[in-house]
Image 1: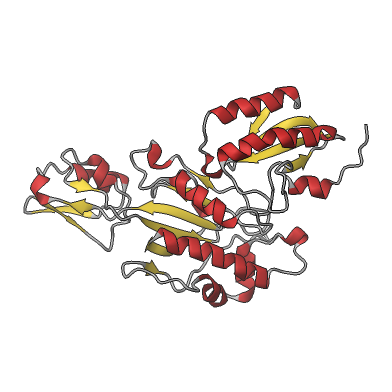
Image 2: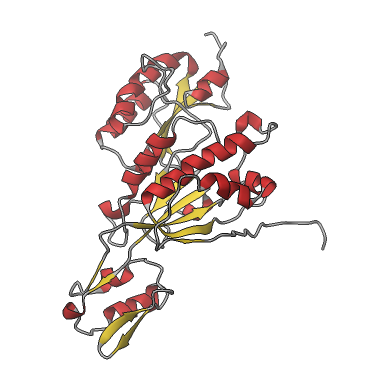
Length: 330
């Protein structure tokens, strides 16, 4: 068997070069982690016929089919095409015949919690937004991590990403349906931020305290509380893990809309193109490091281009992160 493999090209098409010589793994991204169950059978077929029969479910909601001989790469890439079409992800524009498999990149799969497809607490369809963002940004070699979560419970751990999108709702109160049972107040007190109180047998919401989580909606037995028809989001920025100074993302926008969030993400790609370190390995540098280097004001200048925030949107003009630093002193 020839082992003359262009590993750089293989990685571009989402192949992992394993520690075992001549063996690799094919990675399949699934935006939002939500797909037709038919895809599972397709993945199983490839794993059994060309792999070692095992599939790793990745932390970013994709599949990694293990134990594939690299000499079978072209055959597997052809078998991946129906999966690509079923999932509906963007292709590499250079792949005219659509036979090279997935196009990998520095930008990671856009992950999401289950959202309001299932969860009663979720304020929006997380997988739908993840797929929209996927189509806006792929393929791209810049190192971005984006995640969506349906509510402030943050099951998707979006604060560990460059961009975290948290679902919010502006809860709507109908006093005529309220029976003064206090269920919403108890729920907000035990599960959220105590933004509700009872006055004269009716509920008062502290608008400055409310985080738009929607717990009141889930607890009300008479639907006196309902979610707002308009969707709102909180955008957190520049969370990260890694070897150096891991940190949680901070709130940048609160009560924001989807359109402006997508614009900010796309604008940030332009910011990174302009200021990424020329010494960054494979053009991969955490955005947070770039902002630390060139300044938050410069980031905002790029990020907010052509963005017109809604009147109710709150923007934090200065965002500060607490880095984790260690020294050897005892």
